Amino acid sequence: MKLALTLFAVFIGMHLTLAQKLKSVAYQDGAQKLNGLVTSNSGKKLPGVLILPAWKGIDDEAKNSAIELEKQGYIAFIADIYGEGNIPTDNASASKIAGTYKQDYKAYQKRIALALEELKKQGANPDKIAVIGYCFGGTGALETARAQMPVVGVISIHGGLAKGNDRLNVPIKTKVLVEHPADDESVKPEDMTNLIAELKAGKTDFQIITYANSKHTFTSPESPDYNELMAKRAWNHTLTFLKEILK
Image 1 (cartoon, one colour):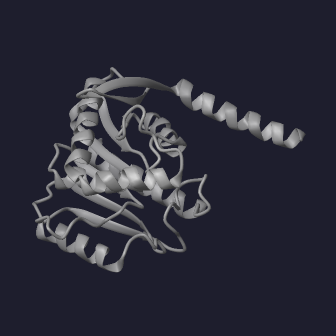
Image 2 (cartoon, rainbow, N blue to C red):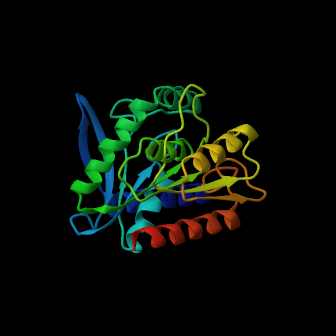
């Protein structure tokens, strides 16, 4: 019983610490209220990183990433894609709403664009902005590039790589890093083949890193897929890429 209470206290303390280090930011998509989070260094003229969270919305992985990025000298903003009142509570509801945005990719792109504008309002240098995304957010990172948004680079971390067969390839001018777990059953081999063809057709500056012995959510400590060694490598690759394009 004491152990359970201790673990609960640590869990609550961690969440409170994360909340204290990030500031809530309300913004709008028409009548829909969106609730993002920004690092405490907002307002300074610094390079910016937009974080697109996984399919359940803003989570601890996104928050921890934002805090770590602040330590590296970036303003980080975590986007709210779904909006107030629409945050999923379980895998089934997360799958449903994420699937809606994957189908209606223009709506997803719009929410990403709104978050990018909010990041700029928080002081980020508009000429030095990158996007990173986890899982569903990794799909969003690629959608940012496909929409030709004015960012210098995107990182898709265990993201979905596919797009509809009816969509034409467009030139992707931003730099692209894909961090892909080798044993991700949610990504079909043809998805990777098609993505590479898409990026090559656009003459894109891209890199794909595959992580051995890693399943889908290998970077999240809260996931049974977590691979500590590969997660650390992926984070180091993320920081190297961001330093190259933003500093």
